[in-house]
Image 1 (spheres, helix red, strand yellow):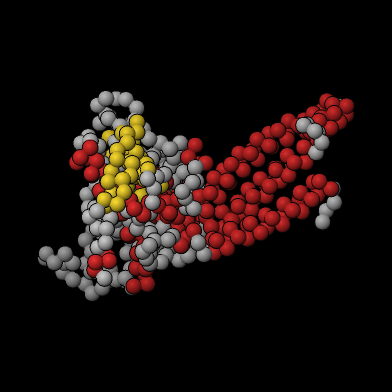
Image 2: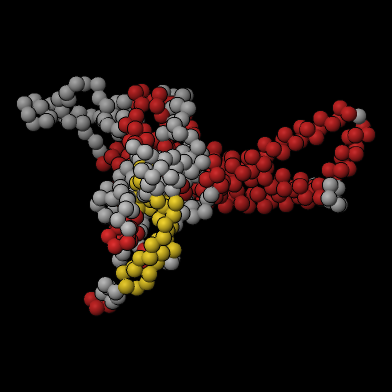
Amino acid sequence: MMTIENKKGWISWFNPFKYGTDRWMYSLHRLTGIILGLYLIAHVWETSHILDGPITWNSLMVFLDYPFGPHFGPFILSGVLLVAVYHALNGIRLTIVENGLMLPKPYRPEFPYRPKSLKGLNNVLKILLGVLMIIISAIGIYFIFTGVIL
Amino acid sequence: MQELALKGFGEVLKTVTFRVRRYDPEKRELSKYMEYKVPVQMGMTVLDGILYIKEHLDHSVSARYSCRMGICGSCGMIINGKEQLACQTQILELNKDLIKVDPMGNYPIVKDLVPDLSKLFRNHESVKPYIIREEEEPKSEFLQTPEQREEYAMFTDCILCGMCLSACPTNATDELYLGPQSLTQGYRYITDNRDMGFNERLNVLDSKHGVWRCHFSGACSEVCPKGVDPTLGVQLLRQLLASNSFVKYKQKEATKGPERKSVSGVS
Ligand code: SF4
Ligand code: FES
């Protein structure tokens, strides 16, 4: 039989269109995970410059604060904060639901079938995630720009 | 009343364009899209549309189908970007002038819209989807209360359409992943109180490409045409396996009914 492969491939991780919130959050979790990984590599590279002495270090710090004009550094940092907060909070949510907690008991499916595992307490967790994310990032971004902890 | 219900029945209400992905195994060329104009009547499903194309426009279009009423699970395909049973999808309800029909993803394509589902069937077989007992021939029936049945009943509705494997993003990159369907069926038989095969299934389910590969994208439950909710099945299985590594899972012993000469009736 002459079949051809039809794998959706890794690109489909980032194709949540037409599916629901859980699928969107999965895509975002992947994306933020990759961004965090790249950030960590860049971060290690950046801090390794401390070995080159205070002059290099200081000029690097100034460059990172003002790469394309004033206060661009804080914007990048705020982005990293948002990414990290989402990845952490969603990670906690996934740890809960992936261990079968806060999910419904087996039930009788009824037409039109709406899967209950993607609703109910799982939805409460998602809303909680959103609220916590707003609070934490507001405090964090305020700190990044002003240096004052609320 | 009846006149109202039948209003527009049998008339061509609009014409939609079907953009169908084609692959001809004999020509050995890459797959391509071809467009067909299909007149739509009330009640026409996407499968009806494909059959219309086959009858009137292009006899070489191939699709898999059998029951035409959502029972056999043969006609899963990607309709406008989402896995759906073609025979259960009303063209008018889609409310689009362009209907894009693709074969299911993550399976090899045999021809046009026909996927090769052998991976699904192999994986399903590997979790031993049947009651495993120690005794050779049972002497009596195994009793089950309605509550015990309720624990797994919803997972028995699976019709093996394979759409969950097409929607699953883990399956898109991991060739050997068991997939939501098989994992859910594994759970269904483990929780059956008549079953004694937990240890036999363990090495398949609790493997590198088994239950721990699920990342809770929920796509399988969303596309499942029978409301099986494989996402739930997989997570419950994971809970069971995780707690098994602390406290060994105790198989439920089904109580036995009165002894008989032969339960099969042939003594
Ligand atoms: S679990 Fe649902 S989507 Fe998956 S094969 Fe069974 S019926 Fe189809
Ligand atoms: S043809 Fe049987 S499910 Fe669609």
